[in-house]
Image (cartoon, helix red, strand yellow):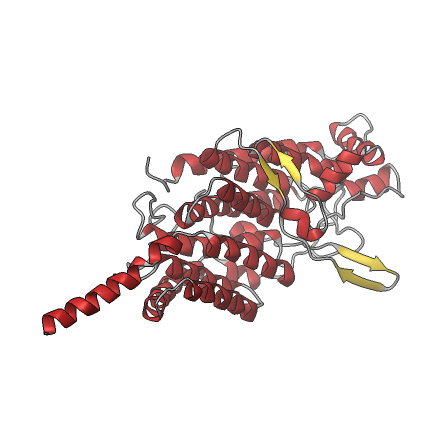
Length: 436
């Protein structure tokens, strides 16, 4: 009788577990998590570098859980700087999808201001699992493991020097001809001047891909610098409809400030990194990637974005280069205004150029060179869909959009692309995430 009872209970357990495969590999929870976290980051108005930090650690936590149950992918343990991996699951009866999603949100929750919104998003996704028939005990076991993973990852996160940079003294503007100065309308303080002190992930140092120096500042009308400034000025005065659309599509400025008389208010926008994370999601859906495959793609792109911001910001505060708006107003046309609002940090190199090129390199490695897609990322912000024949085409458009927008000179764009390409190629060569 005891034997029959044991077999009966065992069969029920196996039957419950048999329900998992249909939804266990469904990527919806991960795609939903990326969008929900992006919305939180927009609402909390994190700077692009800080946003990249939030995204990458949450994705690494989810990816490392998936690796525990998928031989196609390789752990990042020992590959990322100072990363010693996560604890292995001590229970066989867990959902790696639930555990990964839970770990993702536990890490994200710690790194955002709207932690209750993060918990609400997690609760909504856990309800999805329940509706798919996941047994209560299975979910609880998975949550327990996800919590252990997030605790482990967060200990590593706490050692990346972020907290230390929060304690450094306020950045002092160096008043010298050719140096960056705050720009209208907000004249905001410098954003993340110490970001080069953050621990990178794959690159070893912030200056590993240091770009060539920009042209020397000069008011000589025949100098390379002046001619670059004049190019931005003339481009801004002669933009066609398509160029205006390109500039606005790739604006991605979380600091956009509306000024109406004495009233100022912010228009919240997605960060450039989040735009490329969205593109990664679009590609995953087009290729019908499952949860683990999507986690691999998201994590790969996020690592590239994170290192790209560190590298770019390292150069920004080294060269401390004047923005076109400041120079043009002082030496060419005091009434000229760029079509985009100038972001509050030095000009060289172009952040969009560096991060977009790095992300495009990684996505091309994953999905192929001629991967056509429709980018609907900006629909939420009132902008239409744009179509691209490849990730590199999109990256090139993102880069040149900064000249159309009037906020970067051409060398910052072109040398920024070289910088981003180097970061992407280095990651592709050094980081092994997928078995052949």
